[in-house]
Length: 86
Image (cartoon, rainbow, N blue to C red):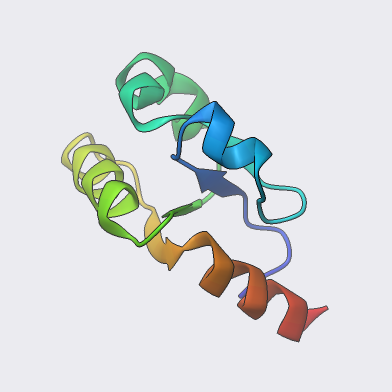
């Protein structure tokens, strides 16, 4: 996992506050359509959530709007990968 890629956590703010990948940003799934321009400015972001389901929905939506991104799955898995590359 590249260090310069943005990690977007699409869980709710409350879930995000309960634990997250260091340096990730929280854009809850329901806010993704309203923040598409912000996300479009990011280079191939990695999306995560609790299990990969909501981030998968967000990735599908973003790709349908021509935005390259990746579903990282659950945030704990992404956190583990980030730690391994530190």
